[in-house]
Each structure stands twice: as C-alpha cells, then as structure tokens.
Image 1 (cartoon, rainbow, N blue to C red):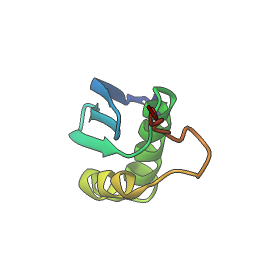
Image 2 (cartoon, rainbow, N blue to C red):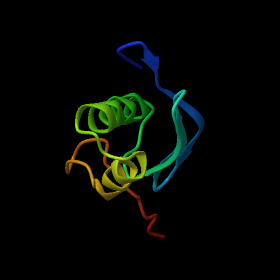
Image 3 (tube, rainbow, N blue to C red):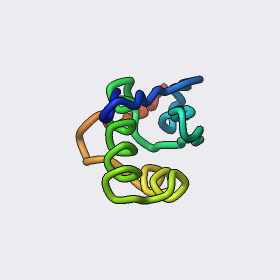
Length: 87
C-alpha cells in the first residue's frame, strides 16, 4: 500500500481465530497492530486506514492502532462461526 511516495507494509502477519496481528512498517514508524477483523484483505484495508488517519488526520500511529483494535466489524461480513458437534 502506498500513500504518496511512502510505502506501508504489513510484516509478521498472523491470522488468529480472534483476528489479525501484524506490524505496520513505514520509513517513519513501526507499529504493532491487533485487529478483531479476519481475512488477508483486511491487512490492506487496515494499512490504508492507517495511512489516511496518520497522514491525513495527523493522528499518532498508536492512536490509529488503538482505533483499529476497537473495530468489531459488520455483523454477517467475514464473521466467524463456531460449529458445535452434538453427539
């Protein structure tokens, strides 16, 4: 993901049952990201949101990461279901 001339990368991406964990990396910062959202496509979405909030709204990387962590997603979209086996 590139914002202007700066490239935003997701590193050490982990897909957990509870969501995504990764590090957002630019030439200016490295920020740990934890998200309740699932799916690889959301790494790109989160990187775009970080670029918009950090550079467009002048928020700190930590404040932007806190906002990402507070997101719960939209019910029915990429929602995790746990199926119980009844014997």
